[in-house]
Image 1 (cartoon, rainbow, N blue to C red):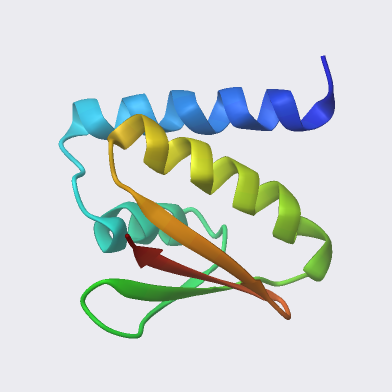
Image 2 (cartoon, rainbow, N blue to C red):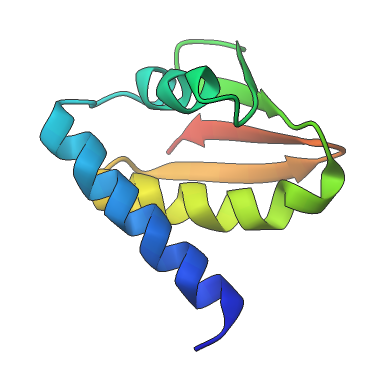
Length: 91
């Protein structure tokens, strides 16, 4: 199994855990990860958020993780990559 398949499974598992914890929104879900020092979160609007990363190398890993996590939570999102940041918007 390749590396990103593992990342997808871990993200999906985290999403299932989040759903069982009652996390239903994008912002509250991202804030729980921010508390764990994964990244910094900035709210652009009620349905769009920017995640600021400490290094560019983690960007594709985190994008894959977040896509799977939100899929497991049943939250449709679009994730757009930028320079050391990801923009996450509700579809």
